[in-house]
Length: 148
Image 1 (cartoon, rainbow, N blue to C red):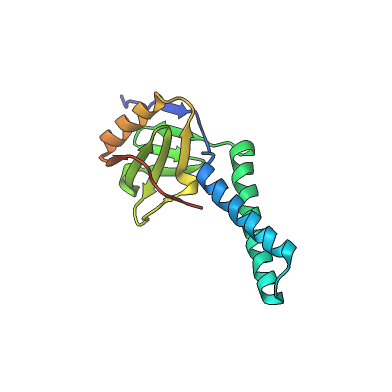
Image 2: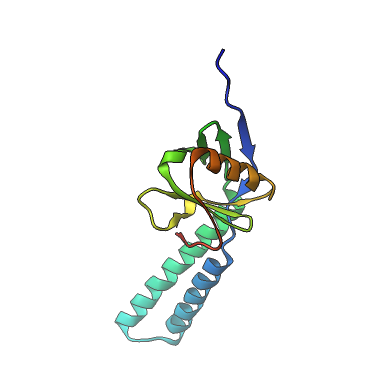
């Protein structure tokens, strides 16, 4: 008789990213100040573009945290993150920084934002560590960079 793999749903949410939000807010405010005080036409258009881009990123980060639901499911040798199924072989590294986890796929140098999650229950990190150990995925603890 074949043994069924247990499916475990882990409570996660998207990270707030206060440093990213602070950076985009600073860019937005600096650009807004330049637009308000006026500048040459080319500089004005460039500043308006930077303001629009940084404002859009701010809105994206805030809406993503509050409105979108993040999902993480462990099922045997598979890990499903927001509908994307990942096996241990496709991961280069599992990165953990306090309650923040990042899944670094092979061929990438920086953790993609869609694979960066905040654990609601810190004890769930032990489940991920056990899964990574079974799959042979190296675990690195400490801060890590993620790409928007």
